[in-house]
Image 1 (cartoon, rainbow, N blue to C red):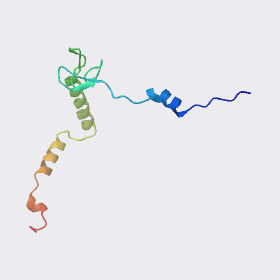
Image 2 (image 1 turned 90 degrees about the vertical axis):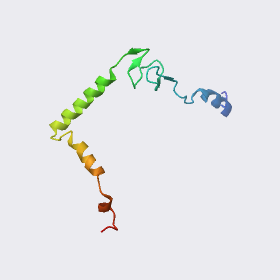
Image 3 (image 1 turned 60 degrees about the vertical axis):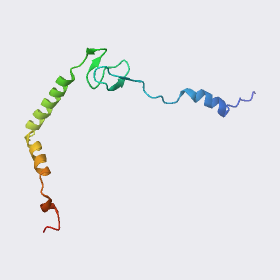
Image 4 (image 1 turned 180 degrees about the vertical axis):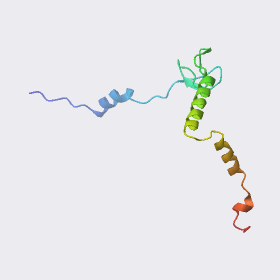
Length: 101
């Protein structure tokens, strides 16, 4: 019966030398200047190789329309949230301070 050969830590380390995580290779978009993965469309503007692949503005507008329709179906006024936030910002310091009471 033959004895098994031992695997040293050096052999194990050399085998695992290619297991390290590498950072992604990024390129800058010539149109908007943001970073994106190579050979992929820019997520910010929707262009790839100076051609428009996806109309981002139309996509955002469609998403906003769906959100407004969902709010209306729930019985919430979509414009009411903005006015509530403006009223919260217009608070008096005299009302908030404890010393002026």
